[in-house]
Amino acid sequence: MSTNSLIPVILCGGSGTRLWPLSRASYPKQYWALSDQCEETLLQQTHQRLKSLKGLSEPLLICHEDHRFIVAEQMRQINVEPNAILLEPIGRNTAPAIAVAALQATQQGDDPFLLVLAADHDIKDIDEFLLVIQEGLDHAEQGRLVTFGIVPTAPETGYGYIEATEKLDSSERKGVPIARFVEKPNKSTAREFLQDSRFTWNSGIFLFKASAILSELERLAPEIVSCCRAALEQEIPDLDFLRLEREAFAKCPNIAIDVAVMEKTNLGTVLPLNAGWSDVGSWGALWETADRDENGNVIRGRVIAESSQNCYLRSEHRLVVGLGIQDLVVVETDDAVLIAKREEAQNVKNIVKQLEKTKSPEGKAHRKIYRPWGNYTGVVEGNRWQVKKIEVKPGASLSLQMHHHRAEHWVVVKGTALVEKDGKKNLIGENQSTYIPLGCQHRLTNPGRMPVELIEVQSGAYLGEDDIIRFEDCYGRTHQSTQTEAIRQ
Image (tube, rainbow, N blue to C red; front, top):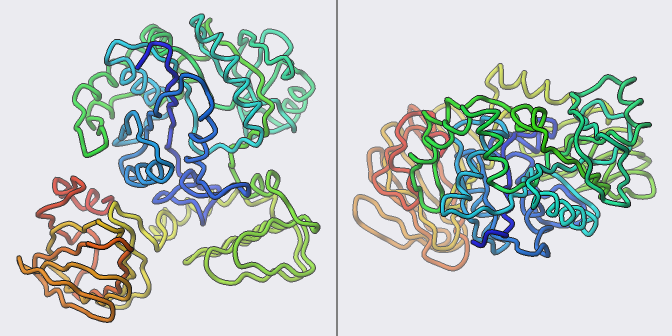
């Protein structure tokens, strides 16, 4: 890594509750393809839009350990081998995440530029975005801490604002020192800001040398650096991941980089960014930024819209019919349907809180759950039994495992599976089945080049995902033992 390299630091945290029921804690919005312009996920787009930048190095990604295999798989799909994937045991906001990234990037004595990006933003004008980033590099080279202010298009009360020391002109792409950061204003204040070209929306995009941000963190928030250094020094290599030590990282203050550093430093510079930016923060925002048909509707999936206007209609599975409706958001998933006035749709986050309070499974997880070897989908369940559809990727293998409280019956419906039971191995083809009795050590492997699909029928006194003892696992999960950790895996 050369000293003038540019490392994208992609922050993959957040659960995106305002985009429920699609975005949930188990599979947040950054891992979905939400843009109407391409099939790549928001995370993949975040990396791909940088490809033409000079001196670009492989990205450094920071995510919660629950999502590590999702992140790795989505990078593999776009042929990217990350610089590192750092796993946070718990969320601690952007200041600790950036501190960890800077420490990791300078471990070998290098001093690269760090371009800090959220994984869940959409940018329409990529050429303009890259031109502004390139301009920001000149300021970062001089030791400045650069951020990019979004040129406001409305009196938005949902964003923080940045005030520059002088007027900004996005056509000049000129960097200006930062006067102050302003928290989310009320409507009247937001209207005043809209008329004053010194004010821009706080994008959460940053650019600086690793040494520059570390120096200011040491000066302004030394506890963050010491905790992050301890967590990184005790990291646990886990396949392609670096798992931060839980106890040390938990001691980090839970604080944003804006509050920890940018509001206090005299090195801040803001560049205006007018590139069709959106934080994809709500269904209403998706409607506003997407291409709409002649009736003002945004339609995704199996949808019929008749005599309907200005709606966002999305189907993931079943047919959705909108007849004579206006200004609505309708989103269908396999286990929940959202119907809301478009201007009220962002308040769905309050519904998510209710679901979590009542421990309703729809609040956090989909029926389709992703695993490093593939995925499974809950089909139907009853008293002491449930049915799942399981898909195993080519060459992948479940762990060698055993259950204390349930038996399983597998029926292969596509492909050929290698099944191991108490040390004996057999190939099971389409329309063939096998029985896994309670207490049997078993494993399923896909030895072929096509996905294997099977129907699993579970029966027993307890069917929880934590009833699992792993003896061998190629994904490093045998050390997980508690109920919470087992469910996460």
